Image 1 (cartoon, rainbow, N blue to C red):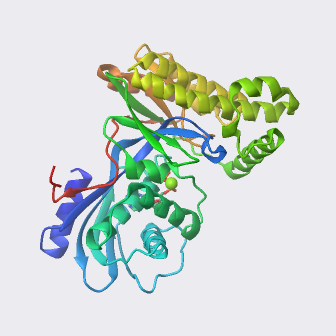
Image 2 (cartoon, protein in one colour; image 1 turned 90 degrees about the vertical axis):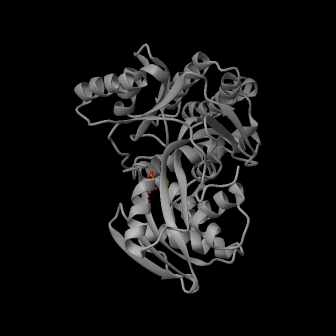
Image 3 (cartoon, rainbow, N blue to C red; image 1 turned 120 degrees about the vertical axis):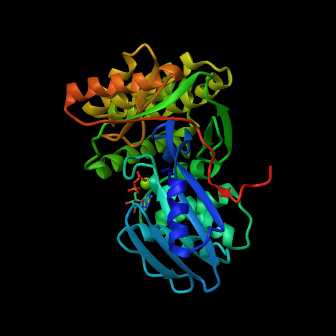
Length: 385
Ligand code: ADP
Ligand code: MG
């Protein structure tokens, strides 16, 4: 059963009627533009065809009652008396979204809902943003406010940052809110302006989960961030976003060796993200793949956030004839890689990479062949075209 069928079936069993609405919001994968977000730069994610779904009906008493099929739990809370932030239980994401929308002046009504999804949880494909945007969409359907993808993304990011105390940029929520079918979304993390670009014809995006999870990543993240900020200060700009490669070539030698490599990654990665858009507009899978390969090398050698497992799965992917290019995706030190592959060979490509990787490392990978999907939406009742 699909998650959509599951939430509908359980809703009907639970409440003895059809849901008034079924909403969904997708997870995401970043194609290129890594560690650029906190440098006011460019990221280039797409929404994947895996999502969190909620079947719901409005309530008249300003309460939310939700059943999580994936966590096998029912929880309830009152909108006018929100429980304090808990320890990242699933319900806290819903409470956080309610809090954040309330802070922004949205008047919310309550709902009864059943939640389930097929975004793998904790794999770096942002099941948390999918849950947040699905919750925002549920509130939208039972309340009386307009849906604005960017405003909803910002509200959900604030929920994650300020209610759940998880430090994340705007990418996850923005792409889950504003994803477009068969398109990737270039996001300017300074202005939050977005531009779509088509995935090259005949290509599939394949997510390669190394099955390894990042360990002590916070201290590494803080080190990278501090160096990038210091480099920007040295150049007298607000963020590394404001330095182009030509200027960096002239002045890069002024930095110490490690800072120079960190800065070079960010500056070249921003350039690659913009070039990736041109490649997509031209339908040029070869160039897009090459940019992804260069991105990985830069993350591995200059930014030093890859891992042996990520390097192994990326090398295995790049060795396949069906692959245009692969790179680590996300913060690094474990988690997922992303590959651009020929559509008709995508399944065998995934199986071959997985077999090689398993034999070489002993880790158990997971492979997801994906398509770019739409952002948060209501699928039932069907909207009028
Ligand atoms: P990810 O990389 O998947 O975003 P996070 O740790 O940020 O990982 O978020 C995962 C958390 O989000 C889960 O522990 C759970 O609390 C919540 N969550 C995500 N998807 C679901 C779901 N389908 N049902 C219930 N809770 C979910
Ligand atoms: Mg998350």
